Length: 355
Image (cartoon, rainbow, N blue to C red; front, side):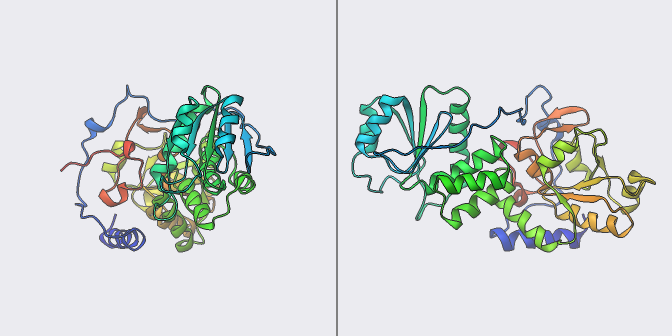
């Protein structure tokens, strides 16, 4: 990357996400420490067909919906909680903050009914963070996979429930965004701010900062065609998969890349990889999509008309659970570029940088 591009990119991140942490641009990763062929990385598994949303009218609790063994609701009363326990509920996940008035001591009541009670409270002064999204998604995924009885996910009005459940519906059950958003609104999601948080979290594959970057790059590069990570994963399974061009630096590519990607650094190298068939589908990527968007513009200017930028690039790909490789061997880490950009990677995916 040129000095000018690096300077612009760091300034862009600083304007979006606050103070830039100092990091050395010439850091070289410890490759041996960051590739573990024997370690099974996070991958997207074939998910069972999502269960339908059943809206149920209850005298003791509203709103209320059932999605398989997951119950989505507003605040239950002491009596409603007792009824749910007799009907098979075994776990309560409360999204309200501890200081919010429930009309009774809910943790104590749940304990008395033999229910597991967990709180992931947010709202008001407590933001809806990536950590809260991830914690609740983990709970829901585990329970869908084989939890005993039902799990009740509730807040006061099911607004917060709708926001968090929406991300799980898209990222874990692979429901299309528009369909899942309509379902979440029907469940109770009403807050535009929470909807925006859910959207950017999903766009970043589980990272709101990366999702915000994706939105910024859409504005900055409106003429560049784009493809999201799930669409790319589907196309790579087709009869004529797209040509993948990785425009990161060699030390980044050395840690991991998308399977079959070619590492190119100049326009001539990229045109040579494309060859004579300028109608071939080409997908370019980098860390988050800035460098590859610039590269896509150049390719389009030189007659490669079916070129698209991978939104969120390898960070969103890995965050979403798609596999990365080092050559033909599965890898478990991604080069974070530097300290600042690395915040947009799921912590467990960040390769260490040499000190």
